[in-house]
Image (cartoon, rainbow, N blue to C red):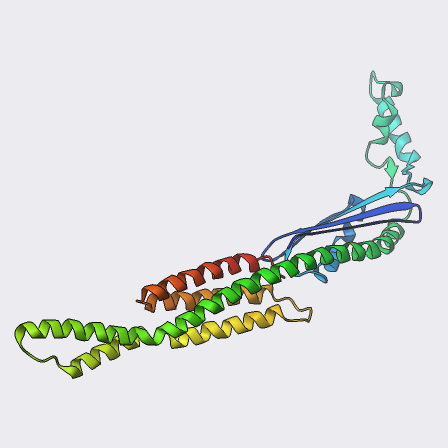
Length: 290
């Protein structure tokens, strides 16, 4: 599901910003983007995301701006002096020919400000409430989208239920209509030869046909899946249900395909095609549900 959340704040002279974005994904995929010096916090931030969402591609971006003197790197004078001595020792080279910015960019000349563990602890203290706030905004937006998705899924389920009831009414007449057509054809053929049709043979033929076209079990299972789906939509706890809906939509399509393969009646065939179309739309939509 799509969503966005952000938060920012200052802590001990540093300004922190957090942005969280999510787009649709069948599974949960997280990407954490933080400044290089805070990379050790990535697992903690990822865990905070996973505690709030279970599906979607989620990207969290952290920015840090340090605005006090503690942000300044320290010049390692010993390393700088060593580099200068070595450069001066190179034949035909003067230290004055080398710019200062070139020297300070040499390995080991600039040392990170302050104690690294202390800096991480400060960043952790500042980022945790900001990430929680940004995730709240993200979840709130996803919840609003989920409400619209719930209404859309409910309308598709109602559409299927109406067509299924129509099929249930038509199904018992299929064998009866076949028996009438069979008797008519046999009576017409037998009259040409002045013989009587074997009623027992007609009954056996109709029984075989009725068995091949019996969809009572499929109708019952499809109806049960609709009930289960509606129960999931009305569920009020916080457990994820998107994958369960995904599985149920596959089962809905399985039963609909079986009914289609057993339905010789034109009206039933039209209704089951409409049902399969609604199920396809459900299968697309549940990919966005958490």
